[in-house]
Length: 144
Image (cartoon, rainbow, N blue to C red; front, side, top):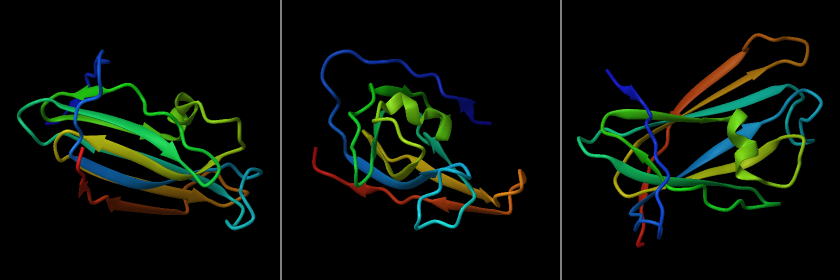
């Protein structure tokens, strides 16, 4: 059984990252929906799992055509632990105030991780999910 994330903020330089994941990330309420999306509620939740028997360091940032956040402090995901990044976490990335967010959550890690995005949407006049999609996000090897 997977454990909840137990993260620590590291001090000093960023570790040398070898893997990167670019996750499509959308968070909008009914009044906030941009012109290119059908009006409705849109939510994204990203699950990050460390399948290794050792801890893995990772960091993340948000990127959109309008803004790119700074990298978040390095976090350590213990062996067989799980972390989650959702729409509620967007303010932590300290982007300029906006009604919502559409762009990418970029994750870099020292070892390969399991990254899964869960997308849900609901119509304007409803509070129940009308559609949901779950996608595994492939990583790419980077030179760090």
